[in-house]
Amino acid sequence: MIDPDEDEINDQLVSSWGELISLPRRPSHIEAQEPAYIRYTAPSLLNKHPRPYVITYEKRFVISASGTTGFRTWEAALHLGTLLSTPAGKALIQGKNVLEIGCGVGFLAMYCLKCLDVQTITACDMEQGLIDSMNHCLDRNGLDPQRITGRLWDWSQPFSANAKQGEPTTFDVAIGADLIYDPDVIPLLLSAIQDLFKNHGIKQFVISATLRNRATFEMFLHGCGT
Image (tube, rainbow, N blue to C red; front, side, top):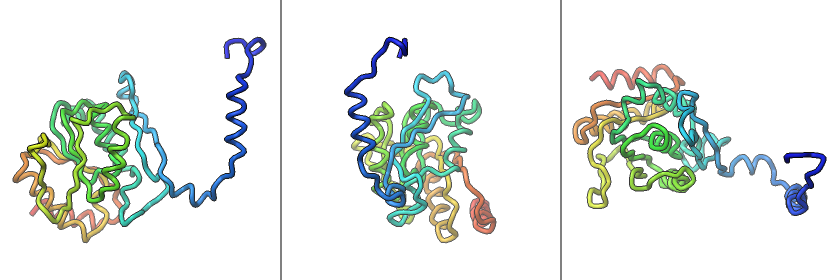
């Protein structure tokens, strides 16, 4: 409104608002399990970016669903995004082919492409539903689908890509957030990282982790040193 004393309220808007508030609400415990669009704003380091945000489609209040914890964005991914937004962090990935391990709903992969100027990014996870959630948001974030690829990857198997469809087979750097949470997964994670360094050109692996269990974290560090 420009002049509250002169401007009139739009009748159609009022009518629509009245219809919406009269609709019955579902129980809160059911609403909490439904996916929703979440908008994450980039750190102030990137305040000159024309659209400094990423939209995801996730179950923000669900810890685990369908046998995976990936249907929400965890703090470790946000911290890694902040690190990569610094000049030193951006230098690690800018203009490079990047692979993300355990991408979840794709916040970090989409953020790297949209705001941090990676050349391409391949986002991997074990659940097709998570890849679908990321792909669902590519258009909303204005992303070029030729530069971001969602890929199923079971860490018990070597990484593979479809070169005939233009998918990258070698990468400059790998990233991952909140991967160190279960001691049973550590051997598979270490095997996956070794495969990337040995067979897919990876020169650096940047990881962000929430320290939930020190023994599990030390198990990972010990495996990296052997």
